[in-house]
Length: 135
Image (tube, rainbow, N blue to C red; front, top):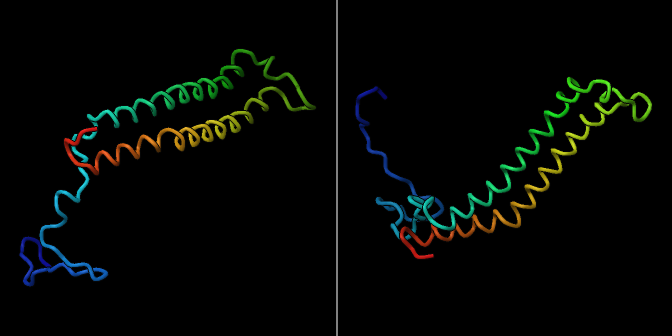
């Protein structure tokens, strides 16, 4: 195939799984209407609920994460305090960050299952009803 030259033989669509091939594609009634969906109440509710969870969780995690280097820099004697043998507060705090990441992930999954997925299904149903459909 050369650049700029048309194909010598036309390409015709081949049917798959016995489905008939149509030249125009699916009818407008069969296609979900995604354009303008971000203006619907369902979509706004989904984004607000996600933001209400994600923003505080992210701020909490960042503060928690930066407490370790800040603690080591601002209160090194406290962070060096041995708790169990030679295991000090700094080591325990560093290990707690792994646990905190897993806890936040679990909380997000729980929130997604109970809230976000329900709202996302409403958005999908709204898109399937078509553009301009009433709530």
